[in-house]
Amino acid sequence: MSETRETAEVFDSLWTPILHVGRHGGTGGYRRYAWTDADLTLREWFTACAESRSMDVEEDRNGNLWAWWLPRGWIGDPSGAFVTGSHMDSVPDGGAYDGPLGVVSAFAAVDLLRARGIEPSIPIAVVAFSDEEGARFGVACIGSQLTTGALAPERALGLRDSDGISLAEALTRAGRNPEHLGTDPALADRVGVFVELHIEQGRTLDLIDRPLAVASSIWPHGRWEFDFTGEANHAGATRLVDRHDPMLAFASSVQAAREEAAKLNSVATFGKVLVAPNGTNAIASQVRAWLDARAADEATLRTLVTRIANQAHNYAEDDGIGLAVRTESTSPIVEFPYAQRARILRALAHLGDIPVLPTAAGHDAGILSEHVPTAMLFVRNPTGISHSPVEFAESSDCHRGVAALADVMTEWVRPPASPRETTH
Image (cartoon, rainbow, N blue to C red):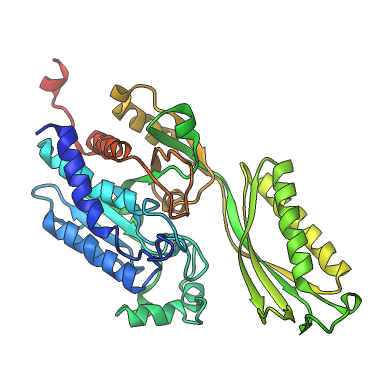
């Protein structure tokens, strides 16, 4: 059997069993929220994949899953490992590929290495980070942020979902101990490099007709809550001049965000909105809206958010309503180290010229970058659509991604050549 055919069969055998998990029958999108039944089912799948490959499985104190392939004769805890993987949760009605592609590809790459007869000289780990999307509790990359100390356990445990359930309560219901959350002091010792494979969340590779790319950086980004407060009243009996309707200032702010982002060659999106009392025949008393903003550099991002907030305050003042703006989370720019990028490009040199691209999407690799060497591989997205049920990647490109990840893995874990080998 050719390696290409074997890679396809292994990938498909891993991919197909999870396609139904968390999929909504009406929208066709995925609702794989942290610590729900769908998430727990995927955790069981991850454990089964690891155990079938004789990999040791560990769920760390923050709910991140690790599957370890230790070199023959290795004694003691893993150290200096080649780690790859991604996450398994989704945004509301998200696509199949965002996150799980990296986990499936990681297990498939392990199989490919074994088929090649390669015995690693350092540990290999497949990782699935917990709650990367932040869809349930409102903060992205909770698992990796807790692990690195970027998110305090006290704040994390107090986060609540739309039903008022706290993260602490969700963990307890899932049989975990909330008191275990916290920084992993052994992270830098255990991880020698983290290489995350991910579907491209954009259309650059499609436009240049290339199946794979290496990431150069992640744009700085963040989330801000805008809380517009007005006065509830009757939608029919209240004169227009007597209204204090927060919906007007909110709507104007949405348009302002689009206009300011265009001026600064950035992106800004109000994507989540909660309205009270949310009645058809009632003037709203409150509109809570979350702004997602991203830019190529931190100064531009600050300018963008300041302009949007200033305009929102002006609209609120004109309409006689209140406005509070709160920073929910921010992530600085991430520049992936040149050394890791160069090594990946060297491992993939047989594929020809590999594009090196920035991304405006956040990832666990970005969170880990301040603590361990990190890098990313992108697989082509032919439509550029992500965070949507129609997110898609060609099977052939997914298989190329597995082979490329295996080549990169080989570059890191293959035993050094002996002096005799290097002379030939």
